[in-house]
Amino acid sequence: MPEPKFRSPKGVHDVLPADHQYLTYIKKAVRHRARQAGFKRIETPIFEDINVFERGIGEHTDAVEKELYLVKSKHEEDETVQLALRPETTAATCRAYIEHGMQDLPQPVELYSIGPNFRHDRPQKGRYRQFNQFTFEIIGLKDPSLDAQLIEALKKIFTDLKIYDRLTLQINNIGNGESRRAYVEALKDYFIGKERNLPERDRERLKSNPLRLLDSKEEDTQILLKMAPTLDQFLTDESRLFHETLLTYLDELDISYVINAGLVRGLDYYTQTVFEFWDQSTGAQNAVAGGGRYDGLIELLGGKPTPGVGFSVGMERVVWHMKEAGIEPPQKDQVDVFVAQLGPEAKKKCLGLVSKLRDLGIHTVGALGEASLKSQMRLADRFQVRYTLLLGQLEVKDSTIILRDMAAGKQKQIPFEKAVPEVLKLIGKENLDRYSITDKFGEITDPGEG
Image 1 (cartoon, rainbow, N blue to C red):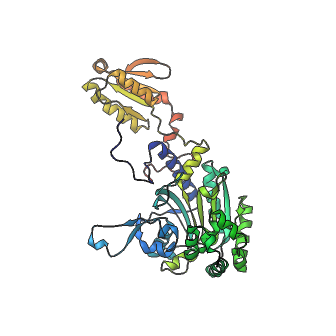
Image 2: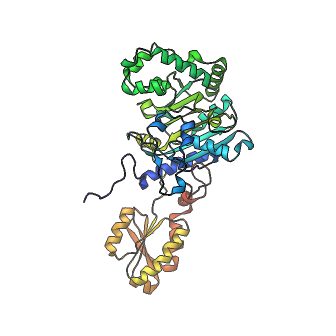
Image 3: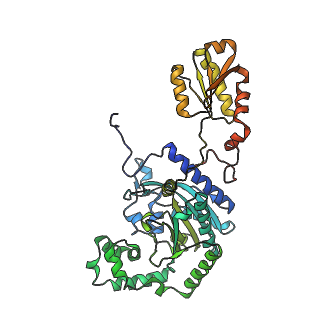
């Protein structure tokens, strides 16, 4: 086989049909749990004014400083605003909340989204430069019970997808902005004279975003941090009470968690609650989901002070976990009937037959090319169909058709007009359940929804 002339760019990948089955299954679980809890779907543009991310996420975060994809337009009228592909969805959702006056809706506003994001990240297992996420956001009220309900919704999704037992919930409270600023100064003071012992990347973090030192994977940094001030020393009584209350709610909901004082998350907008779901075997190296409270984000974007809490989940990582756990999504693409034909008149009659079977919800493939009957039957075997309908010149003349049971290896000749009702009878109503309007999660199926 010759080398292909073009390949997908580094760090991205083609989502082939086999993986789309997983993504579709994940989306169904997400939509089901979102609708149960009253969340409404929102979709923001793929690109935004870069200031949405610089102000919201933080100018010195990796997502903005190193990983943004900038959008360059050839049109002069588009050059007044610098645009960037969205690296995450929360800041864009909050921009939409402000722009469309959602503060006038009954609060809190519960929103969810499903779609691609873009970061110039180092490609690795389950991590790509174009990646899909689903996100949940609760905006407009501050209450630890909302944080608990959000985490419970995510637990239920992971349970539906049968990967919850592979994950651990890591949780922390990073306090309000004032507490964090005081802690950052104390951390800088502690590292005076110790900078030379830090790896180069962590020396940069110390200057631009000291909190990121807490989740550094570098051994030398972790050794130094053992004697450093801790964030909990700077928390207010209000923050402590908020966190303690949240933990009692998680206990009430029977949600296991690990209190992780080093968890800070990588985006500047987080306050109070932060959490991640980690792979039990590899820990933070393969976090599947993360989120927390962002009570100052909407104000940073020009809105009135408005609390919020949310999470995002990397769908490619969920797919990886499902595959590792041997979880396969329900197969809804099985071909039921293969229609083989020989001759121009047979081809003409098969067009209408294939169309009728498909309209009745029977997955049907029609071999409408010029291949020999032997080649068509080999193709039917590759599709692993249950039944084949064969129409040749003689059958056209006699107004008949041959119905072949592929598993039994038996066939019979029937009147052409009986083909559709005969196939319906053989397949049976109970085997058409996968085509009904309700899916495994009991929701209305949205065939066209991404």
